[in-house]
Image (cartoon, rainbow, N blue to C red; front, side, top):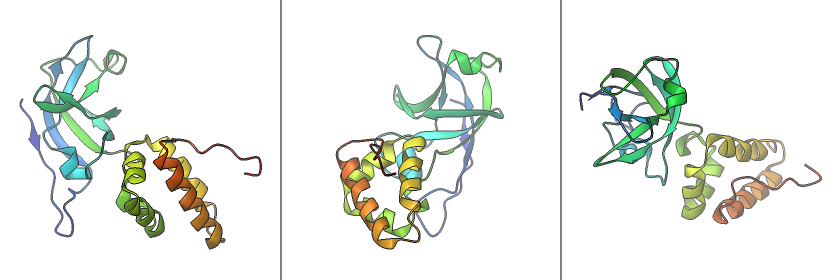
Amino acid sequence: MGHTCRGWVRDDASMVDRPIRFDATLVAGAKARVYVPVPFSPDDVWGAKVEHRVAGTVNGMGVRASVERLGDGIAIVLGPAWRRDCGLGPGDVVAVVLDAEGPQRNDLAPDVAAALTASPSAGAFFDGMAQFYRNAYLRWIDATKRRPEVRAERIAEVVVLLNDGIKQRPEAPHD
């Protein structure tokens, strides 16, 4: 597939330093899609998740995508709208820089991370959400920095919502 991975493993954790840089040869797909093969396991790099959402660059152009199955491997998709102005196509070799999108588990405040760890289904749902939803929950929790008792209540409420598969907190009249 013509790609090399230039990531480094940290001594203090199983996660690879961020971001990951590699070269890849673009592959043709159905419906005018073009795939960027990903030469590493996102579960090994960013932790096991139902879906890995990534952000970065392909040949210097910003990209946001989800890692998908591609035959026996994995890849991100470059749709026709993204490729329209960059002139990239199947067979082109590109420089890729990818990182997990949005706040990750190791980026969270200890109390939030502990609550998600204590509820694996809530944690898995949180990890699979788009960064917009993760950030909204975290902003709502962080708005209570001077009221620790309210912070704990909000964390507990978020865990319940995540366990129920709710991406966005219903707006309350007093918020």
